[in-house]
Amino acid sequence: MSDTGTTPPESGIFGFMINFSAFLGAATMYTRYKIVEKQNQTSYFSTPVFNLVSLVLGLVGCIGMGIVANFQHANLSCSFERNWRCAGRRALAISGGFAFVGVNCVGVPRALCPELELAVPLVHDGGALLAFVCGVVYTLLQSVISYKSCPQWNSLSTCHVRMAISAVSCAAVVPMIACASLISITKLEWNPKEKDYIYHVVSAICEWTVAFGFIFYFLTFIHDFQSVTLRISTEINDDI
Figure (cartoon, rainbow, N blue to C red):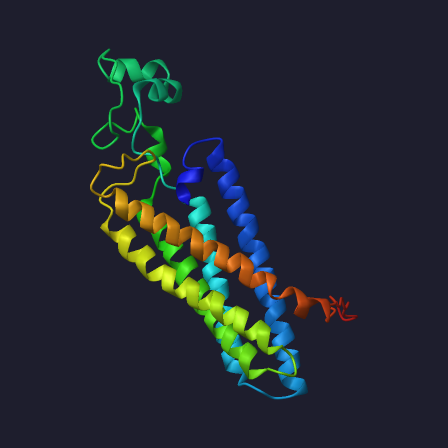
């Protein structure tokens, strides 16, 4: 998924949209938390700690999304022409006047590949791990809460749909992490004959499956949100 935002200007759009999505996700999770809290006060069906833990995990996942957006992967396959655009005439002097075509950035001076200055793969991957794992656990906990509040606050069919999405996401996140850990190099263009190609494909499919699982899961909240109204109250203290 991160490959779609590796190079500019796509990387800027990728970062902006992921940050915006993280904000919307956090707002959705908080709204869901307040709804469940109010429902539980009306008719007790679950311990409030369960709902709170779900919210905290969801917000941690949103923070992970922010990390992914702001610490992006760099494409480790820089050509001399691209380096020339990045570093200008300075590249020619540093490279000794040789035109390197298709040189891999590993071992290349950072002056020739300045995007490496902003590439922090470990931080990026750590953020992705937080986002996916915490997100999957969040959906599982919310599915359990939905079953506990059924049938008063949720229909049984809605509970089944949420649990099904959670199960698929949970089943996809395990091979996603396993295959991603087996990939020896991060690159943008792959050859089907390369040894890590199958791991790359499986990891990418699972990654997109989990991502769309989150989207479809949030869509199941629409009916719940339509039946509530949230208000922001402002009070001014006289003793200021």
